[in-house]
Image (tube, rainbow, N blue to C red):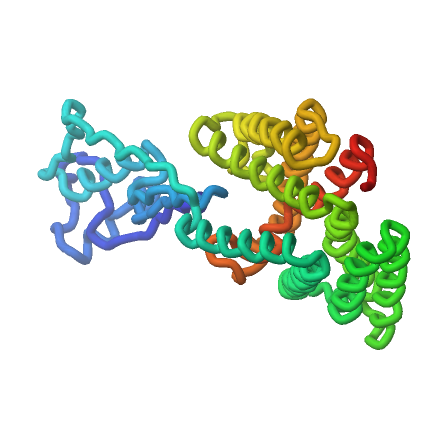
Length: 380
């Protein structure tokens, strides 16, 4: 709310003086004599009431508040009426209609905030590509992971440069990120760690070709990006190396999607208590409970019917862990986007945003599912 100042201009013909009657020996009344007879100490300034429009703030759930115009303070109406009466005594201020019925506010309809038609269409298309590559040839699916990693790195580094003037070197990140995924599939966890170390070293050396100003923040952001996107995605390739690798990856994808869907559906319908309002105002505790319930049920079914030597109770535990990691991953990227002052990381996927907006819950969930599967049924 902006501060409003009261003005007190002097206006000819508006000054008021006490009615003391005619004085003996006084000069005839006239414009020239009236001007000298006025006593400025007995005059009162006329307050000016400006027209002020107050508008509602923009909320995090993209619903605009209604706008209204009128005085900023409740007693401004009385000041305006008193000023009008002082300037024209014959005109009386209009009394407010206290008994008049007020129209009821229109109920607000819940909105999903995105184009659901486009979101569903894009989701179905991505699912078809993933399933076709996953069960057709493992190497093809590794290529899909590498492409998603490179696009995600491009989105992340572009937003960092646009919003924070941080120039994380994309070329060594893209080359090292793709190599990291392939090394994880070919050489296992050891290959992934070696590729991660070499990628970080390449980022340090590549940035040396530019002026030293901002070197520390640029290489720090580059190492963070290498860990956040390609290294976490490498655990999907590690799951794929098992004999039932496609089934493990599919279980991982199903549990993450079901967790997100359960959180959205339950939170949209029943959500009342905010989970982390300062980070993501749209998330609720009821939505988290929905994610846990949906993911645990899906985990029990997937472990019983899809994973060799898997049992339903193991699926319950994996589902619980997925709900927690997916929620934390979503909140983590929400923190990044809030710090950058953006809603989405990109616009590549209509109804979804960018690739990184779809990887936010998948990336931190991949190492969790990989580890629990290794503990429960072995590395395969």
